[in-house]
Image (cartoon, rainbow, N blue to C red):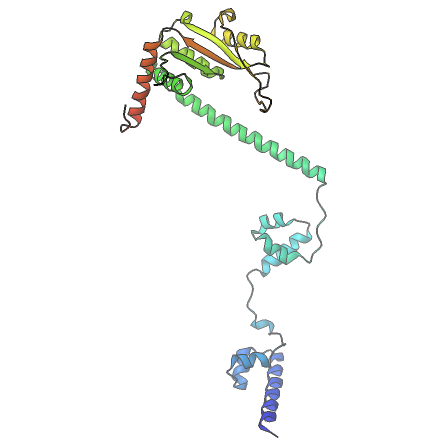
Length: 287
């Protein structure tokens, strides 16, 4: 017998012994020690195809979860429901239960839409209650305004919404325009604090040409507590066919323009107070 044949015969003999020991339930370590084979690669090839004894397998931490997932799937639960129950990734759940039949839908498409709409309605109602509560707490935290607080609030409001003097266009007069009734109420209260009589206030409506200007004048006149007949001619905004208007609801009243005559000194006082606010908030800002 040649040396090559001898080695082959020895290898086959070792394989037979290794397989026999494997089937007896020995671990790779035990086979290694029994046959004195200390090369792991050769040892693995000798027992190739022979499953490891059950007692040598380490317990898998996910075995219990896998079984539970399969049990829940057979009960008809969805992947989302199983994930919520077990806290496992849906990718793992999919691998564990993909051989099981897909459960029948619990709801029809119409029932699912109804449930979804009901859930959305409940969510929006809850969110609206939260919004209203935040607003209520904030509103009640303000309390009564002192004259100084009202004055400073009116100054900031005017600087945001009122007409301002420019170096290229001298216009030191109080002229204010806004569409929010509450803003108009606050501005009129500010003018009252400044002791501006109503006869020095000129009112005019600025509104889209397709709206009811006369009705808008009645609305603003009632809010300002003046006669609508004293209003100046309304300014009608031309319609732009390329623009889609969103302010077309019944509550649309255009804007109210309030012009105060002989108001140059009041304007200068307002502008000076505004820069006083700015400098107090940020002392490094130049006056």
